[in-house]
Amino acid sequence: MSEDNKKVPVLRFRGFKDDWEQRKLGEVGSVVMNRRIFKEQTSDSGDVPFYKIGTFGGSPDSFISRELFEEYKNKYPYPKVGDILISASGSIGRTVVYQGKDEYFQDSNIVWLEHDEQVDNSFLEQFYSVVKWKGLEGSTIKRLYNKNILDTDISLPAIDEQQKIGVFFKHLDNTITLHQRKLDLLKQMKKGFLQRMFPKSDEKVPELRFDDFISEWKQRKLGTLANFSKGNGYKKNDLIERGSPIILYGRLYTKYETIINRVDTFVEKKDKSVVSEGNEVIVPASGEKSEDISRAAVVGKSGIILGGDLNIIKPNKKIDSTFLALTISNGTQQKEMSKRAQGKSVVHLHNSDLKQVNLLYPQKEEQQKIGSFFKQLDDIIILRQEKLDKLVTLKKSYLQKLFI
Image: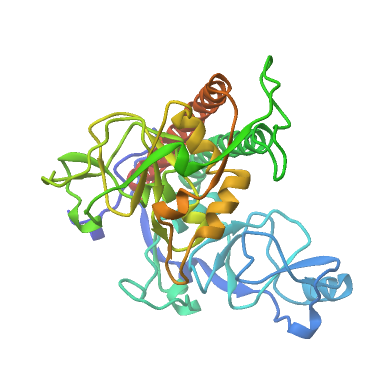
């Protein structure tokens, strides 16, 4: 049986055996939206948030009066608690569940399906995450018209099975949200410690220190404390499924860790490859903006190829690698690196620029304590991120198996 003719999903809850019924969304509901709000009716502050497509799912930057809100809410279509709002332009298909707050939404750009009891909203919310909108397959159109929505196919089980599926995913979503919040709190905690455990501008001691350390931090040019080199060759199109592990500069943007031990990108090793001996500090040599390249990480083990567009710093015995990566990615040193970045559409940071960075550092033992502290914190963050990633992958798998 082809995928298009399937009548039941791969996975079902016990007690449900009937075929699912294929319908069109237009057969079970109609597309509605709020009454149009004109720019002159909005203000930068006010009683009722007005969400435009750019702020949908985020924080509002426009408001309407209480009087206008009450008038339009009573006269024109307005969502009920639990209705699934859909973005119809920009990043089409994003959803927000209406929770019953006093708020208003931009007409035609934010819509919802008004339906009867044939469809459960919790089921519909999950359906929207796997939906293939009619007429948009392979299209570059960034507009979801009412016809696209109404002509879209939906396979529906009985309402009690819909509810069972909806409740299941609600519990799973709540678990994902909980893990995301814990991860965000850990990242905020790390950010707070970074701000307090490194000196602020024009200061020689941090706000927060480990016991028994009281002396002022020294300041030297980074060029007097390390040797510098560059990675060599390799770009994204050189990547293969199996081979020699490699760190490309993009990893420092997308998978930023203080110490990199696990690498999931591979290339075929060349004779001129630059291979890590372990414990080098790497800094991107180019990026889209200065924030991208004013960061660093430690190569945690030997044998990893270091690709082109990476500046490589090998600190001397006075400087701990983990401490160095942390301090030049934070506070005063990070700002100095950003200022030294050159270019407009693409910014560059050369080793000659890094050598001129003024590095503040304490005695080696304090450096090592700081590095160890943040390594432990990073390990907890990575573990939490892995759990979250597994839950997201699990949900994706269940969506494929519990829906047709």
